[in-house]
View 1: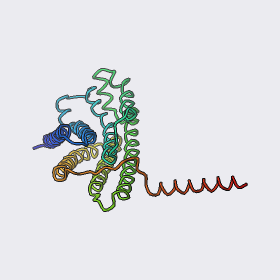
View 2: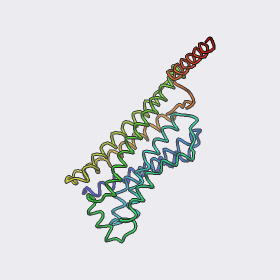
View 3: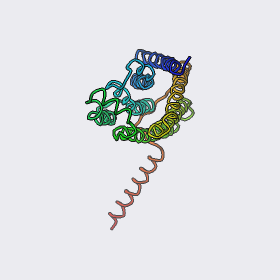
Length: 272
């Protein structure tokens, strides 16, 4: 069995498991409906991302659909961030302002209109063959990596605050679910860091190493999906939410101290 066929098999299995789990999350009856939908969308976006071996085998060349498919990677981390919020906070609701997370996806597609989406096949082939010199692709990769850093920092901040809130308001309760979500975020962070290295090498003279890393990431994605499936099946009660309006003890102390200082100032002012 050659390498290309092996990658097709790995991608097929990963996509099958991802779609199966996504369908389960979308159809199961639960009070955590928003969380399930968001994670199902994340799994579907991940399935779209790892279907390259299958997609390019059928397309046979660069196309608008193929490039548009690649741009869906800009939606993965924002959807995962919203999923973390929905898991950590029981009062989380999707709002119109959350559509702002789609802006990077829209911007990157707009940058590709003049020299890729709007040209003929020959020009598309030239664009891909000379991708190392194409400013649009360099801009999109830089934007993707900046997006990854910002969102992962935001996710870890949410996890830290929600865990502290949980410990302060639900003393004695288990926080295994938050530990699992933290582990899952760390693993994703590692995977995206490896992808960052792959993308850097893509624009260097070590393109062959980039392709090898891409194959390794495909296999790693399969293990991660299987791991999540194992966790979901063995621990259906994965999460215990807290109210996002709850405040940390440190915040309450600061507010109380501020109120006391304000009251003292008022008293001193009135005594003058």
